[in-house]
Amino acid sequence: MRAVLFDLDGTLLDIDLESFLQRYFSELQGVAQSLKTELDASAVIQAIKESTGAMMRPHVGLTNREVFYADFMRRTGIDLDMEWSAFDRFYTEVFPTLGRHCRPAEGARVAVESALSLGLRVAVATNPIFPRIAIQHRIAWAGLDDLGLEIITSYETMHACKPLPEYFRQTAEMLGVDPTECMMVGDDRFLDMPAADTGMQTFYVGSDTDTSADYCGDLVALSDLLPRIMAD
Image (cartoon, rainbow, N blue to C red; front, side, top):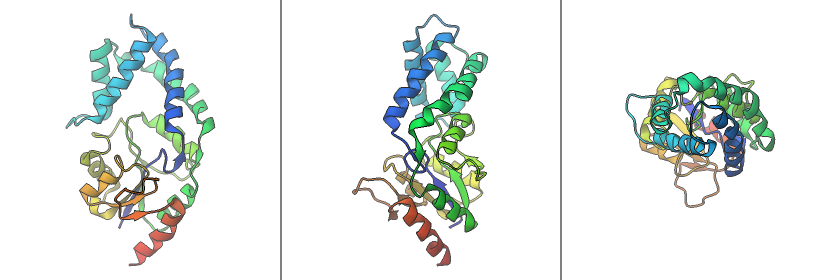
């Protein structure tokens, strides 16, 4: 094994995702109201959600960001290249305040540091439906922003989302390794564990006892396991 892919939300970051998304879209209303459009804010927010869904479907040759922008333009007539400054201010000034209810997951730092200390390549393998700035804020909420983690799957660079095989293959390519040399660590059986279809080992940290994975446990157990795997 040469690399570990760590999911972020629910894995490295202790977050109530449903509550977080409610706050996120509530705060995003202000941005929606500032855009040059005849649509009301609720229609803009709905378009954002639907265009996010478009990123989740296969789209060979396009980045997730390109798909989002084009789909949003089709739905609203809004050119995000022209209007992005409003979103940039949101992610710089407002988005960081949403982290007050989040905290590092137990064992997150020791698990990542264990992987790094063993010479393993590490990716923050979050579902790439957000811009990198939003993901970097969440890495900070997880208490990991000082570790210099460079491989981060964001919508600017990725050409697929979880659980599509192309997502895992591209992340492995960014790490400079083959998928069979990777381990995917995550809490979502439907989004993270399909990494196994590309030949990756899987470590499940969620609560669904019916989930199929190579290993199951918490992040502390993972930090104990990694040296043993590397010693074999």
